[in-house]
Image (cartoon, rainbow, N blue to C red; front, side, top):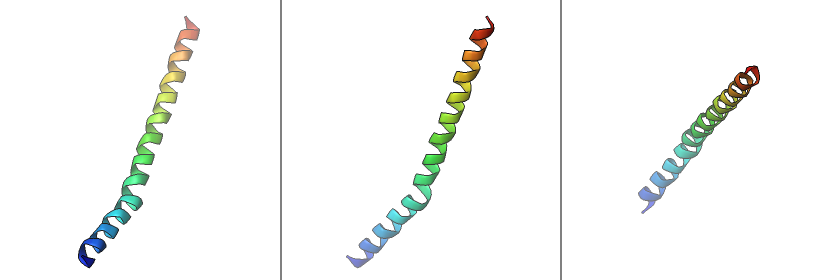
Length: 48
């Protein structure tokens, strides 16, 4: 039982330290790209 608890703690630590920050950066990059696309589209409609 102690072994499974230790592996669970290691697994949770790896997710917390690596997976969550990586997902945060991916979502943040997507939001930046979406804002850039939205700004580019709004600027192109202003020229028309």
